[in-house]
Length: 489
Image (cartoon, rainbow, N blue to C red; front, side, top):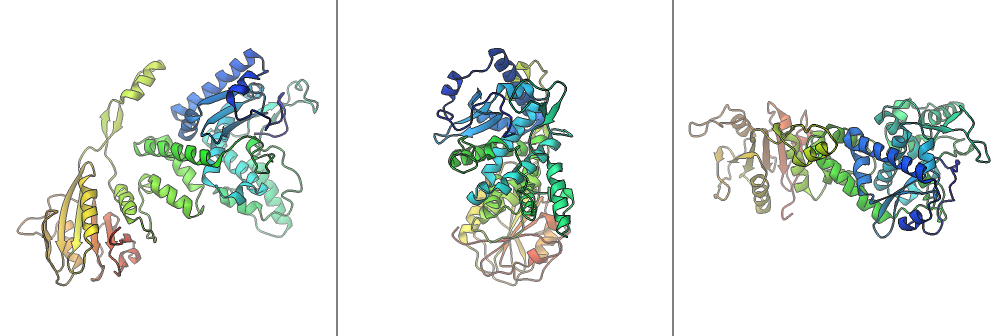
């Protein structure tokens, strides 16, 4: 968290820093101090697990070594080339922090690792302005998520590292408000208009872009960098703490995957933290957009992704369909979670989970033109394997004909989307029988060439437009979920 206070530490990057066993063997701190620091660390991690930060809880669960050491001044998460991950922390530093300071530091370090996982571009990692932007963004989030009004503090020590000055404490780390004031004053001196704080801090890359507008940004050194962002021997910003890119990528992906699964199961804290993290990486590039898409962010948001040119239309449809099939809830007894609560001395509680009723999906195929067999086959498989879904299948051209997957359907006449709308909304009967359920989602597979329609609830409609078709539903007001499908994929 800070690069100037020593707390009796050795310079980072020395031999054996990547070897937790050697660090433990070389530990010089007082055993009682080590035990108290460990207790504070465990208490903070328990708070994360109970609900304050799902990301931090999962990350530290995957750090198999938690090493008290004077090899670093503060705390750091290291990731080595052999795939190992460890938390290093200076016991004296943890004891100097205010009561909730340990929690702040651990949240900060966890967020740093995720930050490095999300923004992997070498140009960013080695840019000192981005290093400062990362500190500002991470501490802003930490302050708000941990309900703090100021940075953690430690006793003030004289320059020679002697005994602390009685009664005086100073903040640890970069103060986002202080950096913002410097940014605002700098731009006003240049005759430029600074952003309001809420806009300045909106995303990590917004902070980075705005700091680059400053003239005097690096005139006054900023000394309170996290150990990860101090210039290391290789000039890579690692400060000598190993951060193997492949290990960071694997760890970051596993943590986000676990938290996403918890969020989709209904954990509100996990959902809130993931949506915040995703929002802070807006405009982060195609890699981040693809990563969040594969994790299921659109399903978590309950929103439909806009049309975009991608080859994985199946992934797109799966996410969109999931966003429209929100689960109801039923009471269940979570066995594993209940066992943990009992072990901690708490009474186990019932949880709410799982669909209460089947969801109804109506799939309509336009038989007036060519229909890729691969699309029909894949859709049949998708809907057939989706738990809790009741499917209804239609073929349509100028008329609407229910069918069972596997049956041969014939068509070739003019296309009329309104007939499908009327049937889905209960106004049209087929052979004297109306649709006996209200669809939660309607999937239309068509070339799009017919007069546009306006369903009563456009948000339920998903349009798959075959090659060469007209994607007018995307231009509809309001727009409907619309994507082109590629035969053979």
